[in-house]
Image (tube, rainbow over the protein chains, first blue to last red):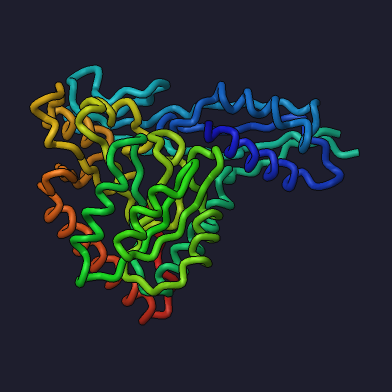
Amino acid sequence: MHEASIMRELLAEAAESAGPAGRVLEVHVDVGLLTGVSPDALAFYFEALQGDTLGAQARLDVRLVPLRAACTGCGARREQSELAWTCGACGGNLVFDNGAELTLRQLVVERG
Amino acid sequence: VAELITIEQSILRKNADVAAENRAEIERRRAFAVGLVSAPGSGKTSLLERTLVALQGRLRAAVIEGDVQTDRDARRIAALDVPVVQIVTNGTCHLEARMIQGALSRLTAPCDILFIENVGNLVCPASYDLGEHRRVVLTSTPEGDDKPLKYPAMFRTADALIINKVDLLPYVAYDIGQARAFARQVRPGLAVFETSCVSGVGITHWIDWLLVERRVCVTADRRHREKGLRPTSGT
């Protein structure tokens, strides 16, 4: 449910970055796999709240950022698109270089 | 004409800015702030009561209580003669840095250690830095030993884990070794304490950790001040 609060921040940030003359067409967001933030919930609240700030034409794109993992057992490094805590090869624990991303990456803005 | 603008900015940047201001304000008051998070009913307020009693005569404590409704927890704290400010979120499922900023302005009593009890929720508070120096997550034995794997975002942001209600271990299927292993899988290096707020077991260890962490923090802060630097922020 915190996705509602996160979306309010995102919409305000996008509107501010676009400026009063800009019409936001696309909002591109990065979400890390360790944030516990749900892309589906973000999409739901974007639709529910976009009318007041960006208008109905805006579209949201959420990219789940792959996790860069290293195994503490065998040392293997790999990228994973889903959260796993143990190494598929040796069963050792994984440590991660990233995963906390919650980023407004890009906007596509139309200027009148 | 459509134009692509690259922003690359944290969505919760404003919250992070206010959290940094809170941390600076808490350090200006020479205090050390500890955030408490858990599911509803894990025993945050009971642990606080035990902790505040144990700290009496050693440190001046104060509390910011976050609840969705009611001031019941704040009244429990006030009964111990500890300064307390209640935040009622009216439905919001987590505390945000702005709410703490408001609470700090209402908290006028001097203190050495400030506890911030979040709304009971193992999901939403994880995303919001409040300006605390350390974050402590509680879990209790009836909840099951797999909580760290089920709510990794919260455990990842914590500096210490308290496994509470160990007095109930004879009655629940809970493997403490398993819980510790899961927690350290999700958050390597996490400090782990086993407590019961009924018997008081484990409270001394937890208090020792608090005192050490506070000293580390206050010393680092003083060193920064002497060098005329801004304190570095915690996680």
